[in-house]
Each structure stands twice: as C-alpha cells, then as structure tokens.
Image (spheres, one colour):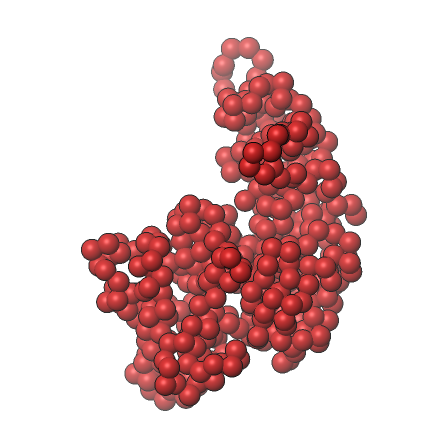
Length: 381
C-alpha cells in the first residue's frame, strides 16, 4: 500500500518570504480540503465563492484532489435552479488511513487504524506489565507493527500520543512514567516503518481531538488524567506548546510541600500523586465508606483546582475540559475542582468559566493522534 505523495506535503512559508508557485498551489489545496472537510459538500463554484480563489484555480486543484482520491464527486445539486445542475464535491474520509497509538494509560498501550473521519477500522492493545525504557519502546514498535498489517487503505502516517515533554521533532525529552529521556521516537518509527510519523504529548493530542471532533471553545484548557496528569492549552484554536515544549506539564506542580507522597519525577506532593489514575485507585481502595470515597475524590479535585486557579487567572481561559475515566472525574472531583477555582480566582472576571467532561470517550487520544497526522500531511486541523 502506498502513502501520500511527498510533493503533496505542505511547503510552509516564512513571514516575508516570496511565495513560490508550488507553495501557492499547496496553500490552495489545503484551503479547499479544509473547506470541504469542515463544511461538507460544495460545487466548484461554491468553493470559488467561499475561498476567494478563481474558478480556474479551483478546477485545477480539484483535478489533483480527485486524482489523489481525497475528493469525490457525489452527484448533482438537488433543486430547481435554471441551467445545468452543479456537480457536488465531498471530502473522502476513506481515501487514506492513519495508525494512532495512545500511551497515556497506566496498564496498557492502545492503538487503532482510523480513517480520515476518525472512525476506527481496527484495534489492538498490549499490556504494559511495568515496562519502561527500551522494553516500553519495543512494545510500542511491536504494537505499530501489528496495526500496520491491518491497514486496508493507503497509509497517511502514524500518530503517537505519549505522556511527557515532546519537541516539534518528535523527540520525547522527558517521560518519567515511561522511563524515556531524549528518545527520538519519531526517528525510530520512521526508520522502522518508512512513513510519516507525528509524536506529541497526549494532553496536546487530546486538546486537538476535542477541538476537531468535540465541542470545545477556541480558548480551552484540557486536562488529561491517565498514567500521568497533563494539560493541553488552546488559545484562539491554536495549541500553546511553550518555549521548551513543556506548556501544560501540570502533573509535576507541587501541591503540598509537606507531603510524603513520592512522585516518579523525584519530588514529593506533586499533583500527579493525587490525581493520576493509579494513585486515585490506590486511595479509593483504602476507602471503607461512601463518605471516605467522596473525600478521596474531593481531595483530588481540590488539588487540581489549586493548580488550575492561577492558570485561569493568568490567561482568562473560558473553558476547562477534563478527559479520563468518567467514574473518577465526574461528581465530587469535578465539583471540588470548580469550587476551588472559584474560591482562588477573581469571581467577577472568571465566574462564568465552564468545567465539563469530554464526551469523546476512550478513543480521544487516538482521534487526536489521527488529527495530528492529517494536520501535518494535509493541512487539515
């Protein structure tokens, strides 16, 4: 099976540079794809009016998109307009597939083959069994290898959502829960499978999924609770990564300086020691009554709220989305987090902030990883 032709990959233009014809063509191609992907079927004339491109330019680019099977003709427009009915064009969600892998869970790695609409074609998972370092990497490579055999359309690329700090080159700079430091995961997988690879922090992938497939606002803070705790931040719909790619690494903010709760990062009292799925389950296992159960969840929610309150105050974000096991996050935990934010941030300014749980379920990181591949390869975000 083939992959998307590399001459179709966007050639980005720096500010102030002269735009070359091939770069303009790539820009037009991305513009038409985004329009069809987001808005549904359009005729060629519709696309010209909607994008501001000439009809000649639209027809030229559409011919390429039809040849690549990324766009299909779906029949003439229904209605009684005079003249020849317009042929409608639609983004083809089944033209390519992506492999997506989610490393955010505490007991297993999850992977899937997805189409361009985010629908799962095939699934696989592998038990972690305490794996870290080289052993964890081997399990990731093995999982991708199994998924590669289940791809049934041309492969657009591989997307990985992993805990930790990840740079733009796909290097995992630090992932304490996985025992990885300065691991060039993109290079490893590209060499092994010979196709484009995108690697990102799992919370950032989750934020992109919520924006692409969910109902998040343009200014959103998404908190991902799994083997670790991280946040993905969107401002104006654009991901904020930070100067060292560590924006959103809230799991290792110390909540209680006097705590004896040891964290994998080497400190004590980090948010992760209250809120990671493993630590919450350990705390809940010791709760003997419903009241104790509620107190455990409320304590975790208060810890989360104490970390989020200064972030809310600093950037005036309008929405916080929690992603992770609903049975843990909903109820006392979410309520305590919201109450703590309101107590610690200026109510007159931030009182209308919304805190909700993501509705995208367990596949949210997988769908985010697919969206990352589509963004890199097709310019669709």
